[in-house]
Amino acid sequence: MRSKRVGGLTVEVYRDMRELINAAAELLFSQLRSKKESVIGLATGSTFLPFYAYVSANYRKEGISFRDAVTFNLDEYYPIANEDSNSYHSYMTANLFSKIDIQAANVHIPDGSAVNPDLEVMEYEGAILRAGGIDLQFLGIGRNGHIGFNEPGTSFESRTHVTSLTDSTLAANRPFFPDSGSPMPVKAITMGIATILSAHRLVLLAFGKTKSDALYAALNGPVTKEVPASVLRKHGKATFMVDEDALGEMF
Ligand code: GLP
Image 1 (cartoon, rainbow, N blue to C red):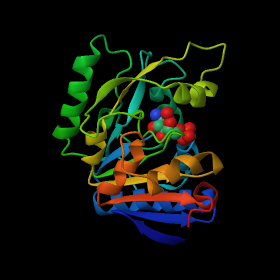
Image 2: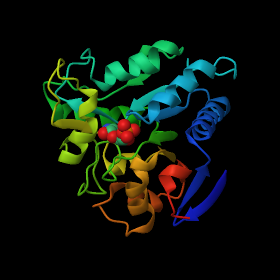
Image 3: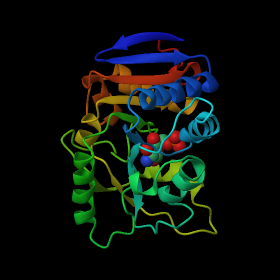
Image 4: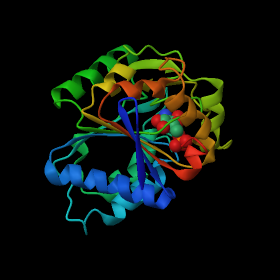
């Protein structure tokens, strides 16, 4: 692994996805080793499938327990039933929560079936605050530079809110909504940029060539709300864990 400082953040470059995933899992394990009641922010998407597979397969032999850990997911489609197979609730249950010893009461995901979404977003912010804030937040990056579901143009001051998905995000995520299933929601509930920046430590994972344009814009362009991930350069304790493919020729 080689690393480089870009603005306030550290970029760690791994040879391939496997090395990157092992290192990201070790970061989570060491966080839980040092504080078993850690508050962990979790992400979804294809990037996190190998991560959750590795974490769930290895946590016991690493001597880790999630019994006292608390989790907050970044986002959920809106509207969507929690039990819909395409919801992030279902994704998290299938890929992580059903495979680790976390307590259901300690798991938080925005409620895509909330009748009053304005109330839901306020309650979600309140729950994060009551938990004492997020110790370690994992993030992916969208092809247009989004983090969570904070699409280009989202205010850096935003807290948890309802958002409309862009065409780019709808196209990227449509494969997760097979024709036979429910129609893809065009909105989502997401932690805001300010919510994400409130986390004590941030770790963004990106691998594969499809992420290289978004990474280039986030690391080399101006810090602008048109590229939401660029704001992470201002955080101070943010790390991008990327592989050589995602970095391309950047450095
Ligand atoms: C999705 C999620 C993001 C995720 C991103 C990348 O829309 N809301 O949290 O980081 O897009 O997804 P993937 O890992 O599938 O490329």
